[in-house]
Length: 217
Image (cartoon, rainbow, N blue to C red; front, side):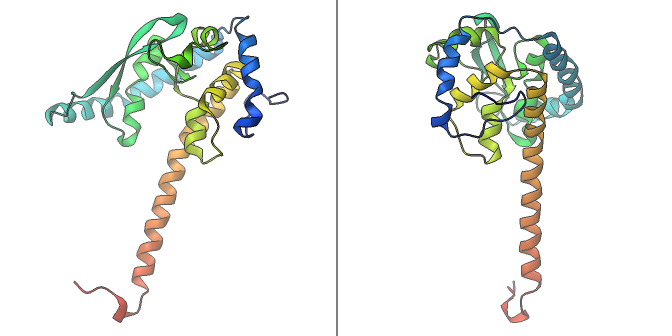
């Protein structure tokens, strides 16, 4: 995807992104160290978000434990991280208020995850062992969120997640990370606003119907 500026989102369909496969092979011949600035962003923002969300995560974990949720309050799965190191990814078993993602913030502070990166994959996943993918996946931390997740939730035309991860590997940096984080924060707010508007419109329509058309309980 020549000519794509750092921080821009790819907008072409998957067929036009096929050239990223060749670029991914070239990535295997060079290292892609995560810069000091990117790690600093992970630490500063990750620690701040952890402090803000820790009480809510703790309360949710206690509620799930008290309710004896199937499998317990926490989901534990092996994932491959930086340098091919396998770690146990702990995730709270609820998606309310995005607490499942916030519960992974300790992994960001410890360095298992980055705030933004390719999707964390289980050990031996074929998506991590294809041509060119093995090297850059070992050189980049998997992310709490990423370009593929943002594209999936934004309503943009869907592209192959593997190609989007390759795009991120080629263009990763603080500017792109901030753009993805901003979009990841904006999407749930937009969805809630749309839901509130639909609810308000529905109530308004019900209030303005002729008396004979209104439901009588």
